[in-house]
Image 1 (cartoon, rainbow, N blue to C red):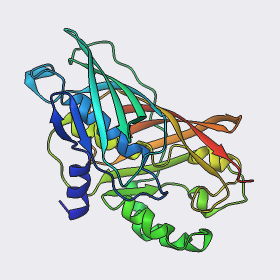
Image 2: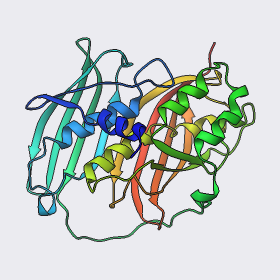
Image 3: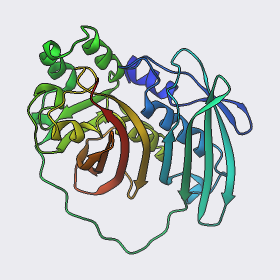
Length: 297
C-alpha cells in the first residue's frame, strides 16, 4: 500500500479513549471544514468496534446493513472530533448503535447504524446500468488538472488531488466543473476503488465506501442547472443528511460503479440518490443524500 492509503486507513480508525468513546483527527479538505465523508466513516468505524465479538458469521468483523446520518454543524479541521457511542440494542439478528460526534462542546454530526448477522433469504435486484470499462477512463489525477482554468481558486486542484490521493476515482461522463453554464441530464457515473490491497474486513470496506460516497453524490444537482460546483464558485453548499443501505458483499479495493442521479431540487436543497455496483453486476449499496445547494448572492 502507498503512503496516501496508509494515512487514510489510519484516519478512518479513530483512537479508543474509553469503552465507548473514540477520538478522530481530520485531514485537509477541498473547503475549509471537515469533509463529511470522513466524519461519517469515522462514526461508522466507532460504532462497529462496539458490536459484540462473534456477532457476524464465524466471529468475523461486524457488517453494517444501514446507516442514517445528519450533518449538524461544520467541523473544525484543526480540532479533534470526539465520538460517543450509545449501545441502543444488542439483538440476536440485529445490533443498533447511535453515535454523536462533538467538537468544542457541541454536536456536529449524528449517526444511527444497524448491523445484521448474516442469513439466507429472498434475493433479487435491478439490472446494472451500462457504463464504460473503468480501465478505459483516465485516472482523476490525470483528468482533474485539465480543468484548472475553470476554478476561481488556483489551489483548488491541488487540494482536490490531495483529498482523493488514496482513491482512484474516474468519471464516466464529464464532471460538473467541465461544463459550467451548460445544463445537462441530472445523472453522473464514476468508478472508484482505493489505491492498494486491503485486508478482508467488511467493516473497513464499508467505512471506505462511506468515505467516498460523499464526494460526488450532489453532482447531478449541479448538472441539472449547469453549475460547476464549489471550486468553480457558482454555488455554495454542504451535505445535510446521508443514508446508506449495504445489500451485498463488496470490496473497496476493487472497482465499484457509483451511478448517481437527482430527481429534484428546491428550497435551496438538492437530492441525490445512487446505487453502487460491483464490476460483475451485483448491487452492493444504495445511497441517498440531501444537501444545501445555493446560488451565491
